[in-house]
Image 1 (cartoon, rainbow, N blue to C red):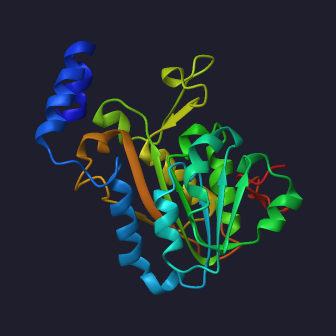
Image 2: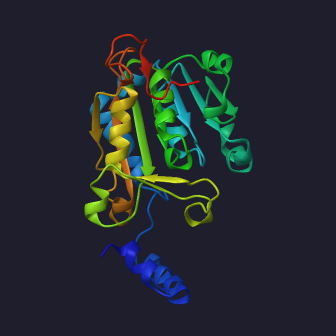
Image 3: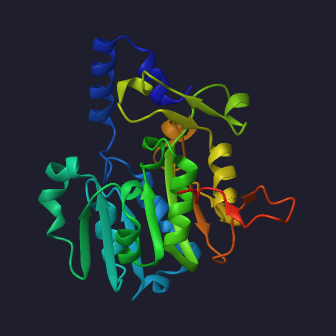
Amino acid sequence: MALRAVFDAMPAPLRDVAKSLYRSIRPADAEPMMYRIHLFEELMALAGRDRFHGARILEIGPRDGLDSKRLAALGPSELVMIELPEKQGVTAPWVDTIPPPKRYIETNLMYMSRAELDALGRFDLVWCTGVLYHNAEQLRMLRRLFTLLRPGGFLVLESATLRGSRALRAQPVVQVYFPDTYRNTGTITHLPTAAAINAWLGMAGFEKVHPSRCFDKSNRDVAAGRMACIATKAGDDDGAVYYGKSGLNPDYRLGDAT
C-alpha cells in the first residue's frame, strides 16, 4: 500500500501525528510537489533546453509561481501566464519577481472570446499542470491547447485521475460527480483515467504522447491517482473529426464546436 493510502486509512488525529513524525525524520523536499521538477527535467531531456530560448511559452494555472520561474529561466521571447481572478492573493507575492518579457492575465482560458484568443497568439510550449481535472469540458480544453500551439510545439500536461482498482484505471473511462462535486471541491465534476486523457489527446490532434515518470522519484504515493505526459503537435490540420464518413460535410473537428 502506498504511504499516502496508509495515512488516509488512519483516523484523523492519528494521521496528523503520523504525518508530523514522518516529516520530522524525513528530509524536507525542495518543493511541496517535487514531481513538477522532474517533469521539467523530462521536458529538457526530450526537447533540449535551447529549444525554448527565444520561444513563446504559455503557462495555465501558475499558482505558486515555482514552474513560472523555471520557465522564465529558459529565456523565452515571452512568458504568458493565465490564472483565475480568485487566485490573485496566491500569485500577488511572486508575480512581479518573474523577469520580463512576460504577461500575467487574470481570466479563465475556456471563457476567453475569439478576439482575446487571437490576441494571445501561438506558442512553442504550453505548460498545464493541475488544471485539466478542474474543467468539465476536458476534450474541449485539450483541443484549445492544441490550437494555441505552433506546429512542432510541446504540451506539458499533468492531471489528477480517477481513483479505483487497477483494472478500472486501465480503462478509458470518466466518473461524473454531479450535483455533488468530488470531495466538495466545487470544480471537479469529471475525473478521467489516464487512458481517457490519452484518448482525448489523440482526438485533439496530438499524435505523439510521451508518458512521464515524474512521480517515480519523489511522489510514488500519488502516482496511482495522477498522470503526466509531454505531447507534441505535428500540424494544424491534425485532430479527429466526426460525421466525416459520407464525405459530404466539412470537417467537424472534435472539441472545436462553438
